[in-house]
Structure formats: C-alpha cells, structure tokens
Image (tube, rainbow over all chains, first blue to last red; front, side, top):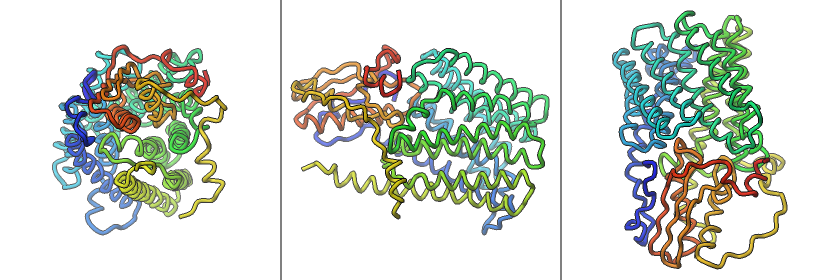
Length: 383
Length: 125
C-alpha cells in the first residue's frame, strides 16, 4: 500500500460483499514465500548433512550452501518481502523475487556467481527501498532499517566479488540484527522515554557497525570484533524493548514478548560466543544469532505477519510455545556440544533445530486452516 | 493435545485488569464507529488503535463512513491488515453502511503524544 493511498476504494467498498482489492497482489506473494520455504528446506537438509545426518536425496550437495540458503535465501527473502509490503511500491518486490530465485538456483546446482549476483540485486533493492523510506520519513529507525539494507548489499557484494563466504557473514549478521533492532527501536517509542535510550542505541549500533567492518575487511570474517556490538544491542533490547511490558499481557501479545525476550538472550549469548576461542565457538555463535535470535523472531511474528502477506489468519494457540521450546532447548544442546566438542550431541541438537522448524511449519499451517474454517463459519455472534 | 491448566492460565492471563469503569454506550454513528474501532488491536502491543491515537478522523452517518487511520510508522507492513480489520469492525457495528472508506494516511506523522491516557497507563507512562 502506497503511503497516503486509500485503503478503501469507495466504489469497491459500496459493493455488498467485502471484496478486498489487494487480494490478487497478496496471492502473488505466495510464490515468493514458497521460494523462501524451498531455501529453508534445502538449507536445513544441507545443515543436517553437515552434521553427519544422512538424508535421502541430494542433501550432501547442499552442505556448501547451507549458510547462504538459510540466511540469504530464507531470511533475506522473507524480510525483503516484509519490507516490500511495508513500502507498497511494486518495484520493491523485485528484491525478494531476486533472492528467492537465487535460492532456487543454489538448490538446483546452478552457478554460484549468478546466485550471488541475484542476492546482490536483492540487497540493492532493499537498500533503495530503505533509503526512499528514510528520505520520505526521516527518523532514526528508518535510517537503521536502511543501514540493515546496506549491510545486506555489502555482504552479498563481498560474496559476489569472490571473497570467502566467511567475510560476507559479518555483514549478514549486521543486516538481520539491524533490521530487527530498527523495528524494535520504533516500537520502543510507545514506552515512556528513559534518559539515554536513543544515545545508547546509537552507541550499540555504531559498535556493531565498526565490528562488522573490522571483521570483514581486516580479520577474514573472524567474529570476535562483532561480539561487543551484539552484546551491546542485546543489552539495549533487553532493557528498552516494549516486550518487557507486553509480556505481562496474555495470548498472542505475551507469546510474542516471550519469544522476543528469549531471542535477546540468544543474541547476547551469540555476542559472548563470538568473543570465545573455543573449538566450535563460531558454529555456536552463528547459530545463537541466526537460530536463537532471528528464527525466534520469525516464530514470534509469523501469526502477525502472515495475515499481512497472504491474507490468511493464523489464530494464536498456546501450543505455539511448543516449537519455541523445542528450538531453544535443542539450540542449548547444540551450543553445549559445540563448546565441549561432542559431535554426536551436536547432531542431536541440529536434529532438534530442524524438528522445531518442522513443528513450527505444521503448527502454522494447521492454525491457518483452522482460522480459515472459522472464518467461513463466521463469528459466533453472527446471525 | 491438552495443555496443563497452569500453562493455559499463564498464557491467557487477562491483559487489562485495572478496573476502569465501563464506557457509556455509543449513540451517534461517529461514536459507534469509534467504539467499533476499539476492537481493532495492535497485535503486538495489545492496545486498540483508538487509544493508540491511530484513528485520525471519523465522519459517519448510518449509510456512509469515512475514516482516516495511520500506523506508528510507515515502515510497518501491517497497514493493509489494520485497514481491513477496521472495515470489518465498522461493517459489523453499522450493517447498514453502503459507502465505507478507511484511508491509510501518514500526515501528520504519529507521535506518542497522540496516545490516550488509557493507553499510556497500559504502557507504563
């Protein structure tokens, strides 16, 4: 929806049935989400193959692309789609289309350079969309979102330039963490502003940005420089996010808040692990950030964002806590295995991570079907 | 699959237990529309869009309703959803409406000062 445009066409609204003008547009988003889901499935298969869990099919070929599929193919496409829906302009959908197709290309065994180029295009579109928004609506949070887009583009350009994937990873961390933190910064305005809230955010974000540059350009993608910034932003989120207050409510609002607060804990853990020199600390730090923080955000917001993306309702159910518990429990197991160098335990943790994603997907689909059925029946009070 | 009762209670804890007096019944179409829009909640904050200060204008008769709403930021992807929820709430409250428009607007930009005292209380101001 374009800013300032009419959400209710009087001509359409006067029709007897509540026909939604934007429905065909929303249906067009489903293939983009399907591409993201394909990246996710292939990425999970590749990740499990890395852990030595044999799966039928070409999973072994996907081991190389596990990271790009999960971060760029899945998160990049989902967040690109969310940003495009917020921006409303048709051209912004080119971003998630490019990253979704890039994921498909990786799954199909296509040329990695072309996939990296498509991911770079997705980054360019997200940055352009972020800059347009920041110019139209100047505010710290719009600038932070644009900064997240810049990181997304930078990481993909590093990869496209033929540098080792490890050097792209700090930028990808910056992309996801800044986009999420920017959205949380915006919502934190609903709370009474304590002194220093904005200044501390700026300091934490600057610490992260500096760490990313140092890591990627000077330390071959080593994560230690990124650790302090992750810790600082996690501390900011734990202190100033609205979730601390909304967790006292009930239902979906509390579920989201519990997920958020748990995610911030994992972000802090990721920051600490980035500073560790234990044998598998890198695996632990990356999964604390990407699964513990980012995937938990996806779990939290799916019931809210899917209606906006696809015009399906995903009614909240207390059972949603199940996939969050599986994810966090198995992630803790995985991190423990990483730090104690126990291969079989790490595989168990990885299987648990995959199970959490499957349960989440099944639960979300089941809830959407239930919501659709309830919608057809109409509200209980309807005549 | 049954959940333990304590978990059910914990996850369903009442949001608003501050014992406010009941609001007087709405009488004019404008009041009915505003009351209907109080059923549209920000899904993440749990506060309705009227108390959040997101409803900028309501012009209403029994047959024609014009409403301007906003979001706390244009970077939020929920604009279409909130507008549709608002339309559904208005249709349910005023079934005779033949001409309904819910516009999403960004001017003036929302600020926290637009929140009602109730919303501020809920959010700890």
